[in-house]
Each structure stands twice: as structure tokens, then as C-alpha cells.
Length: 305
Image (cartoon, rainbow, N blue to C red; front, top):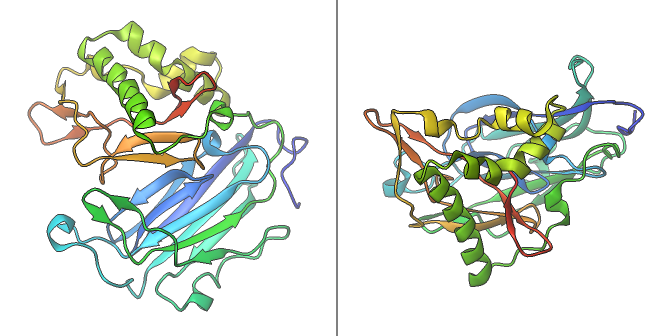
């Protein structure tokens, strides 16, 4: 089968299977970060990525950099790739409830420590999908406190995805600019969420998450619509956690991160923490929520992820 058309799947379910060894990575689908890992080691995981898949051609991207030492703020980044550095990323589709019959849509198998001509040589051939494109000259990922040098980026298109995948609101949003005006607008949107938590305004908090709840309900075929989306997101759960307290709102050492090919944005630090977090009152535990915003045609910042 050369593609995954609407006649093939009534409820298509998309998964991204990852294996990461001895390397730092930012793995993206349609320029939306799915996994960001700064340290070495070995890990294998699978993500459900329906909410990041679009109808038509999707792009899988693996950004690698030599891993950071655990005390990276003092010792910095390793100067070269580990000899066993390896990343496998594979995007699949299957009918919901039938994950034994998966179709491979795109795949990258990367050894960033090898010579350029051999880095992606183990990537699987997929009929109808072009080869992996390698880039060693792209602008490295950078945060106020660290820049991930020695970067190698691998991208690959997918087989075309069927037309019955929803069109997400962010796809029709404005192109976000790296300007003080856009930054201030997004910061105000964060502040609105923060104030709702601080004031324990559950009604306001739910309203701010409504758009995201709608799209998650569509993405994962939840019965119950918006209410089911809120249940999946556990909207407002931290209001009920008596052991956690809201930390101060801060933008210290953060950056205005524009992604999804300019259609979404967030404000994060090098640990991917947003301007506010919850801290456990007695244990050294941090609870952070992930937010992604788009800017609609009316110029409003809408939290959508």
C-alpha cells in the first residue's frame, strides 16, 4: 500500500516509535516537538501523535546534538558525538484497536557520529517516500543559558495521510513573528492562565482550555466531546492538589519559541519549563504543564495544546 487514504481507515491512529542512544535529540513532527532529550543514555518510547498529524504529507525531523553532561550548567556540552550515538524514529498508522496491522509512513535511522554519507544509511526504504535529507549547517538550538552546538538534522517526508484527518485550528492561524508585540501578547495569554490558577477560578481555567479540549476529543475519537477532552487533559487538576503550590510567575532565562513552521509558539527555558510551575510543598518535585498557542485571524492568542 503506497498511502493511507480515507477508505483505508475509519479511525486512523498514528504513533511515533522512538529509540534514542547516547545523544541529545529534539524529535519533531510537522515542526512540533514530540521528544526533547538533553542527556545521554538509552530510552525507547512510543507516543500517540494524532494531534500533531495533518492531512496530506507530514514531515518527520530528528535534530541531534552531542549530549549534555548531567551538570551541564558547569561542564557544558560534550564536544563530539558518542561513537554509539543512534536515533530511530518511525511514524505508523493503524486502525484504532488494531495495532497489529501498522503501516509505516516515514522512518529515520540516524548515526550522527558516522561520516555524512553513512549517517542515515540504515534508514528503511519506503516505496513512495523520498530519502532522508541531512543538514549539518542549520542554526543550532539555542536558549539563554545554553546552545546545542555540533547539530545534525535529518528530515524525511511521509506517505500521504488520508483526508479525513481533522484540520487543526493552528493550521489556519497567523504566521507568528519574533517581535516584541507578539512576545508581549503571548506573555499576556500565559498570565491569564496563571491568574486563573492563582485565583482558583476553575470556570475561567476550563474556558481557557476549551479549544484544546475540543481538538483532543477530535484527535482521539473521544465520546463526550469537549467534556471528554477536558477529562483527558485533566484540566484544573492542580487546583485540587493540596500538596502542590503555584510558584512565582517568571520569564528569567526563557525564550520565545516559535514552531509548527511559524504557526504555534510557547515561552520556555532550557528545561522546557513555561513561565510558571507548581512545586510540591514537602518534596523536591516540580509539576509543569505544557502549553502551545496559536494566533487566530482576529489576532487573539489561543491555547490549543
